Length: 461
Image 1 (cartoon, rainbow, N blue to C red):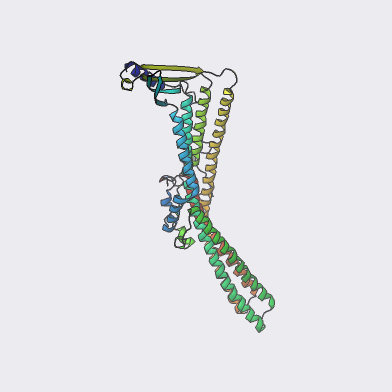
Image 2: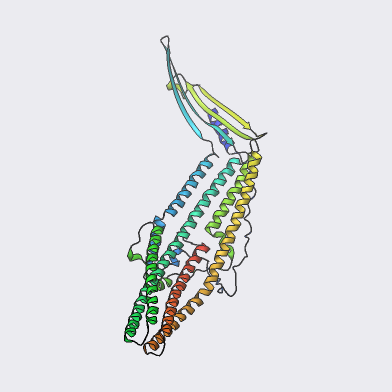
């Protein structure tokens, strides 16, 4: 048994030999974007206090929307697929990591035979490992590192999917609120236009005005009816989109009550001053892990050009009697080292060149991910810097249009002015109200967009 212990110790020592790492030393590339976000007339003064980004539970105060987002994170099939990818990558990493350690197997056998009335029995028990690669040049270690980085990349991909789903659900919810208000506005405009048409028809029958005014009034009525039909369709499609994101039908009790109420429940997201925050964005981290995996693949490809040393070894006992199997002198051991090295052919040089080209590919993708993130945040900040002024101006335009229409309608009813002026101001008011809803929606969507493009959800939900 002493010899068995010595052989086992030798096996463990060989498995623990330090490997030479032939992968290039990884250094995070310098971000190919300015150190600070843009400034200028389109941008609001940056606030340096506090961390950039917000967790979605802080971003959104509306309890109904929170409930819908909670369902999305629990039921959305895209997220389930992303999580399944994480589990798959984790399992592959465990498989690859297992190659760094010997796969020890045990075997027991018994044989019975009879010849010329003489019975011959044999028993044996063995333990050992087969074709274990001694990773002297780091090939197996780098393959394991590449699998680890691929696993981490899928985790960041899943985190990116969560953030995107939160943003998409909130945006779909706000879009539904806006389209509901457009539908209500079209119905309100139809009711007003029908009253004007009724008055115009009465005046036409009485004689003061001609058929032209009647037909002009009819155009506003039919336009409002057309808008009602279109908005009704759009609201239904918005419901379908929200149900798809949530993974199940969303009941009426959780639908938005008003766009303005939703606006007050969506917080402004701080972006900070430095663009370094983009390096922690999930999709950027995913691209970096893919770059690290490609870097490790170079090490594995380089190591494949050196000798591959494998060892098959076993220790065991054999006896003709089961009772003396472990107490007799039938101890045996075997060791069969082997080495192989590519001399001609085999594609080792081609594999190395391919690994280097893949590393350059993932480097370009990593840098492009940072540049895209910088542009997305800059665009959202430019919109944030001007949307408040646009919204205020749009609200003043609605007030002015309401006053203009009221005055034009009074002058028409008093016979001072033509119906065309009243009709023109009515259409201007309708357009101004539609634009006000669109501007309100743009404000909400941009706040949600800033949450997504900064990508700093500290709760990780």
